[in-house]
Image (cartoon, rainbow over all chains, first blue to last red; front, side, top):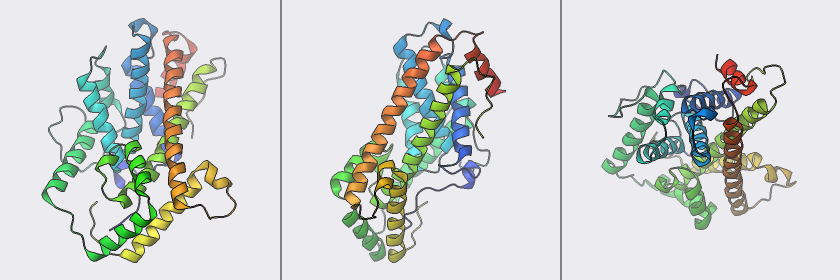
Length: 218
Length: 86
């Protein structure tokens, strides 16, 4: 069983979780999501709470879309965002539109599910459904080597730590395999850092209006 | 994604590689001179690291939303956003 973290694949155009390209993609998606959401305009009449939720939602959507469907946490995060947006009352329909605007890798080869929105949503949701149905149909065969590897990881990860990690990584509760959990955690931590960097850059850029217009980071 | 290659020894190597990568990633772990960081401690630090990143995202979201609340169509901030999106 391969324990490597979800690395870059052709699905995201060669973008790995730690690259500058990735950070740039997050920033771009974030801007698109914020502009579309009307969070950028004070005339929308959004309450403080609504605006904060909108920004948070845009940030997470930007992260998941930029990362793509390769890692499990990314698919889980996108699924969470989707369900929360359908369930809650929203001031505008921007959250649905945001999915249309995010940077979608064109090389996605996944079959589309019955998701009614954009390619980005389809890609992520189809991946999710595929993953869930695959698990139901096929029980994981526990070969001796797999069991040995699992034993090695179990020795390494105290159960409490594994539980704590599962709660923090999106989709972690579904990761029975601690090997996968470790890889996903690594990828998630790196991606989160990129999200923080992108948001900090945006904040700094907006707070210094007197500067000449800054180019997006390279 | 569900490759069933059975390579136990390689898996062990991969685990160690993941753990050492976590170690280089964590800001506090890098400060440690030796590499005797216990794995449990490392995982605990990873937990706190992710939690602190979550808090940072929340904080930045709040500040961004406050900032955007004061932006109108003609403000420099809006112009920056428009130009970045061009």
